[in-house]
Length: 270
Length: 157
Image (tube, rainbow over all chains, first blue to last red; front, side, top):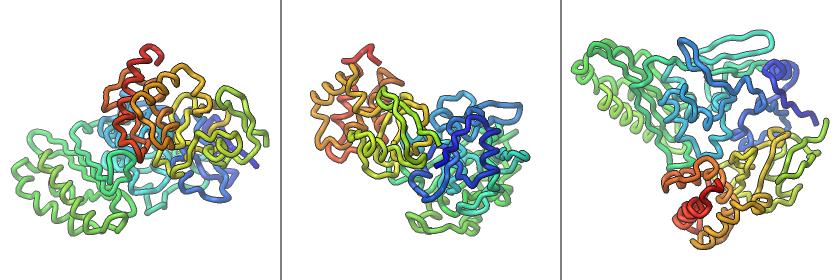
């Protein structure tokens, strides 16, 4: 039986282009899924994918970076660290990676929620070319990704500015080893007494993470007093727009929790 | 394809099977490491915990291809160490073991924790063991045992 354990990204991309392989990063989802008859492309020796760096605009997290590694890095924003620190337990965080969390295609992925709320981009590589895609465009549906059979997720690019004023809540069935039932992340930046930027993302409630940039615009440019007056209408707009699916808990429960978290976010941040 | 080489409890070994095979199954069935327990096969219970290059993993969530040329330690190897002797004594003194099914994983999680943080407080111990479920003890005796081991084994970690 063949075994693919490349040590460079170039080699990994060549195998990905030539063979029918499933990229294997940390294994924490794949080994539970336990698909039969597949050939894994083991990426855990590709050190190019395990780097955390920064440029003028972005913190760049390699797709092979583990959650434990991110928690130790001074470059990773606190909002991402808070979300990642609630993932499962140490042994899973030692194995699980940012690329795997994306590639698994689940709306429950705790790091992906933060990528949505921060407008992160993904660098996608193949042997032939490279491209950058917005995270919300990468997710086309549940388990449906904008990723060709010759491509690998190479890096996650998180904008550095304006992430200090955040709100995060994960609702799970227990403290450790909990799969999110509802997760919420919000960012609200003010300038000269007015709301300059607001972002609200909901995880684990539909086929993908949900974010409604059109609704967010309702509060941009508003003072705290104006935003306070608009608050109930703003929350109602979300309640009317969100189409949630049933999962481990009912869609109605999910919507109530989403609206409660949104209200708490606004109460704390406006 | 060449055999897959790795180090198991200090010994070089070659595995001839598939890269897709589950480390948990291979350790138990091929190498007779029966300390590694199968509780869930979902990474949810920690009974199959092992150390790979000194880092704690759930062996149910590791395929053999991911451990080529790496070093795996199970309780069969760890029990030969001085650190184990300290943990063993501390667990016994606190009566921290009841049915025992979770204990190999629990002890390796304690080893991983103390290696990274030799003097953890209670909260840090609970966090370090948070991936290891125990249905008998209620955890308190185990948490106290790990705290005592940290004191008794001062300097070992």
